[in-house]
Image (cartoon, rainbow, N blue to C red; front, top):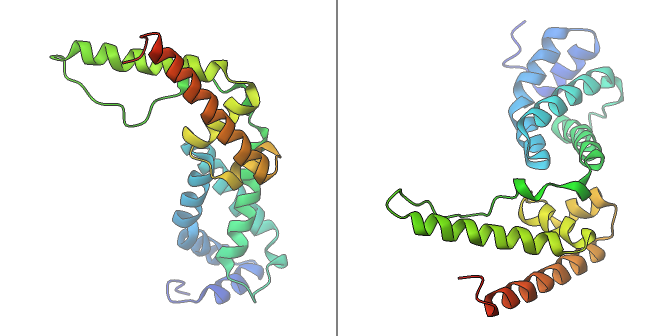
Length: 191
């Protein structure tokens, strides 16, 4: 039987009857979309690949629970999202190393501009130092939002905080950082 022409519903029915080729076709059809979602949530290639494998395995095991009134991808992405969110919750966000924080849009300098390289490094060091002085709860929010690109909703879920708390802490953290940067600039330590 050629599965390329089959509708998703027919593939699901065949897979429920034990046809592994039909399920392989479902995996083939949805693997790219599932991976993109996992990577968007986890921001880590290896973890995203593992989460996808686990999602497809769980979906296969629970195929009888799939309600065909809904899109297969919606059901599959719900399984994947739950796996990814559990992985994010297991991460110890309080101990994110500041050494790994890379400043965005850092200018690229040639060897002919060594003073610019030094200035960019000094600026990065100042930002890391300012971040390290923030209370942990505030630093966590800044790093998750600005270096891991999590949405406010994702941060709320990962940290088990309300959305309002996330917004307030991010606002206060940005204010504290601005004060530190102004003080540093007033001292002549930031170009």
